[in-house]
Image 1 (cartoon, helix red, strand yellow):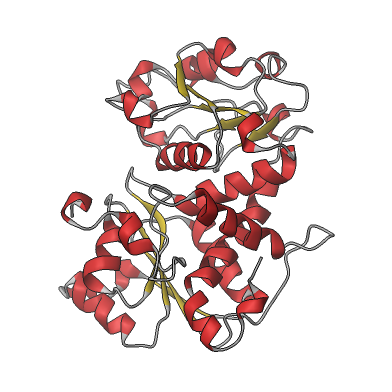
Image 2 (cartoon, rainbow, N blue to C red; image 1 turned 90 degrees about the vertical axis):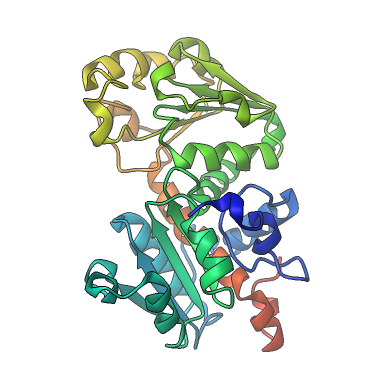
Length: 338
């Protein structure tokens, strides 16, 4: 499936009133839309930093369709939907009718006929969620939970919420470093796009050349490349370390775990080069001693566990906002207005 053959995501993600209809990618969305998501997510966290429970999506059905495994992402979407009082169904795609010869279209149409309102889709093919939103089930809200190397928009937004809550600085004033396997990371792509949209002017990508995508210039204005960890991390406000995927550790792109840690691992000496109040983030799961030292992952500057809580809040926001048109009709819009 090729995204280029379809409408651009920005054309189908919003309804005629400019409200979120699908959430497929950060690219093409405005600063106003991203801020709306962040503000709505913030409203789902109380003054004690605890997630609230609300009946906003009572009577709605959310189906988690994970064609690619990810326990962490699936369970946080499930937790988010349940906190909104939605019905949640986790569909085991590997054992579904598609394994018996049924086409993907027919499987999705049957699930749509079961009165589903939202599909949360994770797929190994780039553009899968976009394809489903436009050509298969356009009347169902499609939330992209990660597609190939393309995008992971809710991960990017939980990262943005964490940055906003923890630094308490405008994005325009921040220096953010993203370290690791940029080439294969949909998180990196979505994080860069979100930071640019929200106004960050100093985004530093730190990686060996073998883990950079071809045509690095595609990332655009405000993004700088560093092959040297110490230079890239100096005076940063935020450090995001990415997972080195095990399937690539012994490939020609990466000689060994120890070699990567030696050159690009986040240790105490390198963290000391950043600003004293610099926060450290990781999308998980972590390879301790490869991307990050345990003393930092568990240390006072780490906000990794906060990312998990913020992830549920962001996914609550995206689920709720994707139903905003229906909620308006039912008089529930006050519950998610910001």
